[in-house]
Length: 493
Image (cartoon, rainbow, N blue to C red; front, side, top):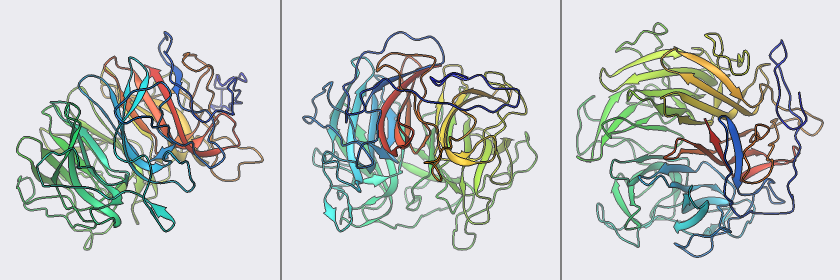
């Protein structure tokens, strides 16, 4: 055990971290700097603040629209989405958080940002730098224009927890979320958007421009121009090897959808189509390790997803709907070829504690605890990585986690790779327990660095295979403060 955040698990597998920070905690937003060379499995704090700030989140520094700057940085937020474009640049959109004013309680954002891993600078690309206030909440209405027609005046409304895809041409796609429609009404959305990074224009591609639209399922497995998923947020998404987009669940139905960006048609592929008849659809697990046409994960929200090197789709955890079992840690694999689900790992019932084993050692018995709103990456070898979320540690205690895991699809084994296996607890933490971040020196990778416990962050993988992590709700470097973060981290697997 060391005070700087590196730990060696004891024989019992438990560990704690005492954080130290050498940062100036008076700063509200730091300029991004070049990241030094790193060895494998080291974190580097790249930009943003190492403290939450007095209002529970740092304000954004937007600068001039379309102009990169070392002083620019998005404000603290949760529920944003991310893309990596064909040039390897990282993109960030929306979420619930802090605009340029930094006014509490924040709002539902529609700002679009681009980050260059090469020059380490943020650029505000689209959307509003301030919210339009309406009572105690605020957000910006969408400007939809004409269906299928790009325009510099188009922009999605502010929204929380949509899903995203990147197509084979490098265009960025956005679907749904909880946010503001064309009338400025707040609700669940099912609108589909495309953003062209070259022209810097949004196109409304499908779905409704008003909130609360119901799904049109058609015939299972049959694409149709009239099909469309219903309004939803906190869903999960994938892109398969053929460039098709996939969408799963809305927390009540466990419907799986495929979208072909060439034909612009949706197909309902599996799961329940009727939340009124079958609310909070339960899972059909079958036999662990055996794929079957009758298997299907239960309805859930706030899960995470991966696509492996073979093009198979993976799903982990989330929060199950009523009757499904609370927080989940089940791992599923879906083959787009056979159209079959397979339950691979974890519990078929809810609220399972984590089994961490020995740090850095794979085992058939290790498994992350149940959780919702973690983040995920896929490395260049096709291994699946998982970080944080709100869930259960090795003792069964609930809190905001900062544990890092790797899963090998070939061996079907989890490995605990970093972070703590316990939530942090001191006199100030009776709820929202979590480890503080150890930031080290900005731009300098170190084995002692580690992000604090958090959930609803966003993640990217750049063209060099590095992992990136931004924001979320969680713990800063001080241990005592929690809120909506705007810190950006890089990890070299």
